Length: 626
Image (tube, rainbow, N blue to C red):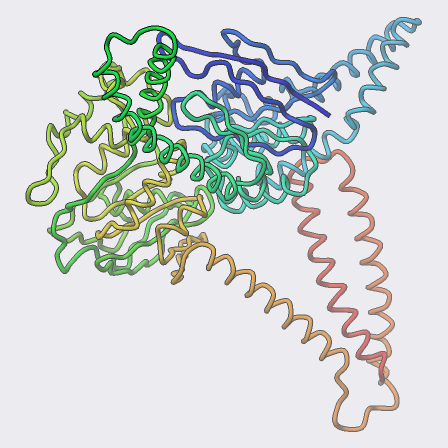
């Protein structure tokens, strides 16, 4: 079943054409992704599809009664509203139906007539269709999963990750027929990314998304639309399939262009030698010559990130951290952290949002001071620090002026130099963009420009805090190529698992309460280690339980329980029965309308009861065998 048809849509801002005459469709159950370079209009196209913006021309047609859900790249809520107010005033389909039902119920009570009765029946029917009766309970469960428990907290005090989780929870709760997700993994920690990945993989829901997370894209999507140089290409497969097919296409273009170039030389000689032949067959050959000329010009755009490095010499002493501690109020960031950094180390930093990863980087670079301990940086160290907040540009300046403010000419090696405009071209800023004001750049293009300002200083200790957010796939691939040949020290905070696998060979794992553990290997290796460790722990627990239950004493077993053991035996049976009753009561109570403090307390008690039942059953079995 076709859910959505897009026919010849175009969009331009001022004199900048984003896309023209684009057509494609989305079928029920398809999990599709849109891949394109920054600045080509991915987010704009998403907004057009969900009705947030109008296209200049073309048409968009939805199947009748299709409900859509839309997660913006940067969700916007009133910062003065509490989470509870955001939820209760949310303009979702389900909330609208609930409000309609409540109004109909109130009208029916006040004025019991045929009209209000019909209104109430319609509202009840809609409540049934959207399963809105369990809305509040599902909302609590979803927010609890997303670690959003304090509904009195103002949105303005939330981190970027918390705002993204709140917006995602509201979109998923609405249970739409088709989900539009714009960079859904941005600002989410790895635990949440993996939860969302599993949810979408197992779901039969129709999906259209923009993402730079290649593992997420590869595991979730079964179809990819690629917008490249004004043409929309369709790849019926995952990310690996798309990469293979796009490379094949570009290689075929390159071969065709080379052949056209060779033939062009021959045809050019003919054109010059026979100027009088301008009719009949000759005219057709002339037209073919101009077509051939255009074909020969077709080359893959080489304005890509091809950046060499001639970093400053790095001495023997790099960075030493000795018993470093840092905390904010009751939150402990670091506790007695020790590490001596060595040449060529490539370290990734992982951990939940808000655990102190960015604070750690700020202390290294001197932007924040530790509470105790020492941080000593070697005299030859030149930091290049790409922060998560980004750079504050003077948006009135042009792209070229922004780079020239840092360096007019960049020197590499003994005899190699780049001018500012050449460097911009290498960073996929074509010469036509150099005179544009920064204000006209997309969010991803600004991040790429910021990355360039960090790298042109030739740092020998590169620190990247969430570098993959808002960068397109081509930029990420080229950045990875650069980092794989980078000879200095590298420290990366990222939730992009693919990026970490490509760029680092060891990890700092921030576990909370000031604990940081080291791991030699990339993220996938660490994930495999955790899975194997969890399996081993479960195997050991199961073996211990089995061994305890099956174990028989070497000495002859007692024929009869003592009086004290008999009393304990009877009491255990009674305790187990009472615990099972309490467990059933809690299960029933959790289906009621509760606040989050009550849910959290009941969940904690449920875990305690489960442990007590296991413990008491084990002892009862021991006594039962006597």
